[in-house]
Length: 592
Image (cartoon, rainbow, N blue to C red; front, side, top):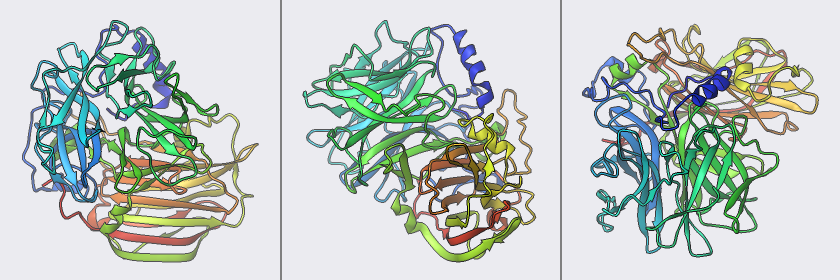
C-alpha cells in the first residue's frame, strides 16, 4: 500500500484498471520477491536507529502493515497486525499479536494466525475481531486459497479462554465460512468488519470489494443466526460508482451530542453511523456519516456527504488500512491506522524495518454532526517528560521563535494561535479546486508570503533550516465563507537523495499533504497539536477536525540536532496564546 499516487493521475489510473482482466489480482502492495525473505538481524547501528520511532508502535524489525482485529478483552488491549517475519518488504504475511494494559507499553506474543490450511495456504490477510455472547472472542479474516489470489473469509478462536493473553488461536476445519458466489469478484473480496447483532437475532458483517467489469466499490452484506452459516444479502450494505476497489471497510455507530463511544451493535434515535473505506486507487481512506436503515439493511450517507474521492478523510496524509474498535473499559471508540515508509526501498531494507502503527485515536462525532473529531488517547500523556510553555508571544511577518528546552525530535506540542482580524485573508481564486488541498499547499507553501498565514510550526528543523517539515495554516476568503488550509509539507524535510538504486525499487515520496479545516473562526483562534517522533509527524488541527500524518527522514535534523520553531510568514500578526511542549519518554516495553 504505497503513497505515491497523486491526484493528477487518478483518472489515468482508473482508465488503466478498465484494461485489467476481471480475474486479475487486485492487491495493493509492491512485490519484491527477491527481498521478501531477506531477514537481517536488528542491527545496533546508525542506519537502524536514525529514523526509528521511539514512542510509536512498531516491532523490532521487518515489515508491518494493516492493524487487524483490535479489541479490549478482560482488561487487556489486543492488537493484531499484518507482519512479514522474514523481511522489510511486503510478503510472507502473518497475523502478529501484541498485548497491552495501557495502549502505550506493548508485549509481543506468538503469531496468532499464519498460512497453514487449504483455506489460507497462500495468505492470511486482514480482518476484525468480534466478542460473542458468553464473552467469547472470534476473529474473521481473509484467506487466500490459490495462486490466483482467490479470497475467502475464515474464522479463528482462542484455544484457551483462561489465558489472559489469548496466545494461541485455532482455525477450525469448517472454514471457510464465507465463499464468494459467481456474482462476486473473488480477487477483490476481503477484510471482513467487526460483526454487529440485529434486533432480529441475526449477526451481520460487511466485506469490501469491487464489482466485476465495473469500478463500483461495494460493501457486501452477509447475515447469520449462529455466526457459522452465512447468507449474502440481496443488496449490499453500501456501494458507490467510480471509486474502485474497497479495502478495509469499517462501519460503526457514533453518539449524537455525546463524547462516549458505542458498541458496534448499538442502535437508537441519538445515533448516527460512520462508513469508512480504504480506496485501492488513491491509497487514501474516506468516510461518510449517515443513517442505517435497519429494516432494509442499508447504509445511507447524509445528503451533504461526498461518497468518493472528494469525501472526508480520517487523515489527509500517510494513513491507511485503519481499524476501529469499541473500548468498553472507558466507553470510547479507538482508531488504529498504519503509516507506511515514504523512504526508498533501499533504505527500508538497509534499516531492516518498515511501517509503524500511528498513535491510537479516540473518535467522536463533532457537535455539528458533519464530521468526526479525532484525538490521541489520553494514555499517551503518561510519556510526557520535561515541559516548556510560552504565552502571549507575537509573531510578526517573517518571525520565528524557537521552542527550546525539550527534545525536539521526540516531542508533543500543543499550541493555540490567535489573530485580531480576518481582513488580510487572501482571496480564494474560484479556479482553484476546493477538493485538492494538496495541490494548493504545494503552490502556497510555508515560505510563500500570505495575508493571514502561513503560520504554524517548523518541526524536525536543522539549525540553518536546510531541512524542516512545516505544519501550518493559511486562511482564505471565499465568496461564501473563510477557508482554512492546513498543510504538513515534507518537500523540504531532508537533503537525502530520494532516488532508489534498486531495480524496480520505489523512490522516496515527499508530498505537501494538506486538507481544509471546517472550523468556525468567530473567536479568531486556531489550535494545532503535533506528535513528533524522529521520522513521523502526526498533526491534529482545530481539536482534531483535520488530521495529517507525514513520514520524513532528515539527515541533519536528527536526535539532539533537531530544532522546533513557531513561525509566521503572513502580513497579519499572529499571537501564540498558549504553547505547551513536552519531551516524550519511551515506553518501558515495545514488543520485546
